[in-house]
Length: 294
Image (cartoon, rainbow, N blue to C red; front, top):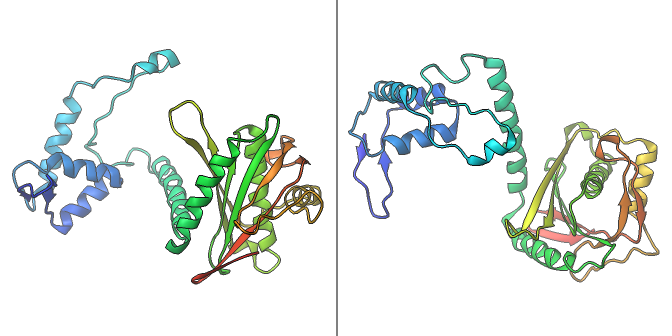
């Protein structure tokens, strides 16, 4: 049942539970259901008759003239296609296996976002300041040098490990280096826990200069045993765990800075990293309301 617009021009609509379930069974998409509700919010009340209104709109969509396309598709040799926003048949009824594949992909991203959101609120100012300081710093990296800032949040054994990094440039090499760093940090957890039950999620920010946005975001997730070879493990440890020499800790700011250049072999974008320069590392252990440098 549509309700008059309240202060702030927020439309409100009331549904019976069976109508709500009909919409989700028909569309199988939260975005599509919310879009439908916005579409019908200003129409006449039909409490209990949502299927009838839905099918009327679905029929109208099927006969509608396709809207304007993004002109860039012609430069990409694309083929235009048009489908009704509201399908007459339930979504996925034409190929449930294919539809389930898309749902699995979406749920995987939901899992990653939920993992990142698990970082306690009390640490978010620290993380945000780390990102701001790191982005400002890496843009000043010396020519021919790749600058890294890294931060790892460790919680209890039943929590996901979260890794965050900022790098001065985004290339296949730096993507592989970031993946290698996260795999190493994930592998190290297996010394005290069963890796089969563990997940680590990493986020890499790299500054942009084209004015489109301020940075690129790369996300990597590792679950289970990454199965590092002995050679890969030694290489990653040498790159990221150098105990002395060029490695210097900036404990007062509790951040990671790692400067150097890495060359990468093509094994799944991970293996064969050879450091030039000195890495620096830090982890933050998250235990309830406390944090300590590790």
